[in-house]
Length: 302
Image (tube, rainbow, N blue to C red):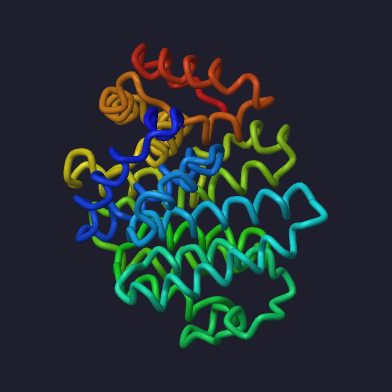
């Protein structure tokens, strides 16, 4: 990442070349690296030297998607053009590298821009009567290439949260019974709980101590049990942060200490920035939670 910021791309090329046969790692690494590349012209320099590199192709698609999402979020005049370019790049990448899940994950990311489901690929039905038509075909294509793909599931969850919120919980309830025990997908319900908290009147949610009640308490417990049997290092920092928060907020201090201990010096802004009184108090809430957990104080309220 430091090399990319400095305009150097050879280390990224080598890293992606060594990752190409590991679908889950390939998806996560291209996502992170593209966030850095999107803020520079390094990919243009790379293209001048090695225009046919497969790592370059997927990063360029990722960057186009990030630009399209950012433009739409800012309501920029060129947002529609950027969205079209990003979609075309996704479809071209899907044709060029048929076994790569990333183009399909990127199409899922862009699906949130079609809130009225005008595109046919966003109106696919599913065999589950609880779930409305949506971009299920895109999800299926991503999971066909990488069955436990974390980003694909999170993109689908985010899609429903933005397009039709009631379907988000139904989607998670359908996914969880089929998710491998120990998989980071066990953290998906924790994202639902945070989203519920953010969309409830804050005063009422705190008074009711949401995470001590169902289904939030059980979600934290099940996620912890799944993480406890997972391979070390298999859960990303953000999922561990959601788990640490959920355990602290549900007054499971011993378990919270375990997760905070594994996190060590690492942290993510979410969920702390989402549940704090204001986003600039996220670090304060995180430090308070850590202190309470290690002190064994069951006084969490958020």
